[in-house]
Every structure is written in structure tokens, then in C-alpha cells.
Image (cartoon, one colour):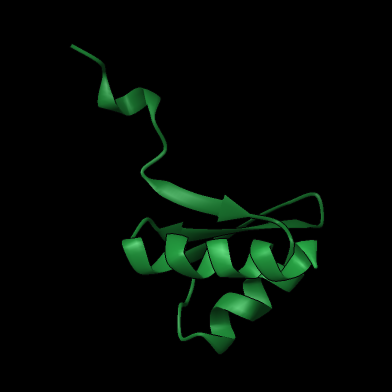
Length: 62
């Protein structure tokens, strides 16, 4: 059996463009972790989050 403590149950990003895009789509982070002037935004992993991320990255490739 795999220990669930080994996996992060939240999605995280430090890229502000990604944070702003998700906010425009109505997806808000659950909390922010700050360390040495670097902000890490944490999100609940949901199917909607990953659908929007797929769209975000598809648009970045163009």
C-alpha cells in the first residue's frame, strides 16, 4: 500500500501568469506559502482546475 502522506494533495504553482489566468476562470487558490520572497500558490486538485490548466498551456504553445 502506498503512503498517501508521500503525495501532495494540492496543486501548486509559482507562476503569476498561471495564478491570474485561474482567477479569471473563477478558480481561487486555497492558500499561499511564502518563503524568501517567493510565493507558492496552492490549489485543491479538481477536474475543473486541470481542464483550465490544459487550456492555459495549449494557448501558451501558440
